[in-house]
Image (cartoon, rainbow, N blue to C red; front, side, top):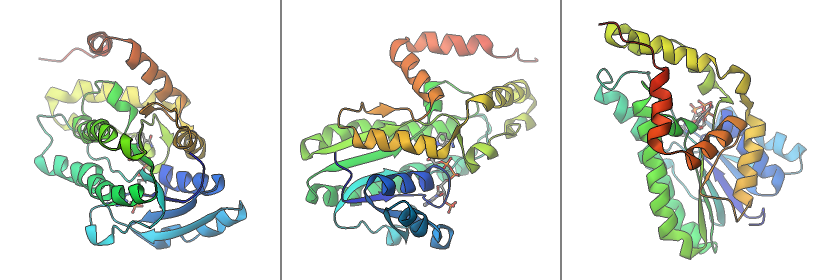
Length: 274
Ligand SMILES: NC(=O)c1ccc[n+]([C@@H]2O[C@H](COP(=O)([O-])OP(=O)(O)OC[C@H]3O[C@@H](n4cnc5c(N)ncnc54)[C@H](OP(=O)(O)O)[C@@H]3O)[C@@H](O)[C@H]2O)c1
């Protein structure tokens, strides 16, 4: 597609969303950088203008339908807003954690998307870009609630693709690996599941795995450039990485039987003290 018309980005106050909003403005889209608190994006229009782009900030909380306004002329929707939570085993994670993650990552995204689709159709088509996670490609313990919320988005994206391709709307799923943002920084901790003796060893192991991604962290502007490339590429596949770790993991996922991937991870798990 050509970089023209309006692009709406959710969760553009910081991190990947902020970088994508600036990148899309630099490529030629008129960007609506949406966020819960618009004061957090006060510098964005000036930064975009300095690079010759056009960007405005709008209040949009994906959990508050009254704030979800879709601009006429929309060509690209980037469903980026997302949250993580406590890293707990399935046994210990309360329903409130699952509900909190699904409220933002799934229901908020669904409401934004269903409102955007008729506008995208009226614009003659465009792109719905959903940001999930490359952790979907690894059977990581203690991330079940977060991964399940993103897997729901992945599944809805497949169905949506089949529903709207005939309307000229392309569905894209970005599976980021470790991108340098507040969310990634916040994940550098011993999982809360360590409070339960039964999951202490796997919690320590998971934290070691998390520390291991250090050299593989990608700056948000570089990830945003890869996301913009995929948005503009009409031949991009449904699932795309935006950093070297995710791109490699996606390739392995596409070419390795799921049981073999699982066996590789299970073989590395620590023994459980009984
Ligand atoms: N960074 C990574 O390594 C990584 C890896 C895999 C996937 N991801 C995914 O990439 C996306 C962006 O993550 P990030 O790393 O940039 O995270 P981040 O730095 O924590 O930023 C999250 C963004 O989502 C917004 N948000 C949260 N709840 C919202 C709501 N109800 N309505 C509107 N906006 C809301 C936040 O707004 P406030 O400022 O108002 O809180 C913030 O702008 C997420 O979907 C995340 O799951 C990130």
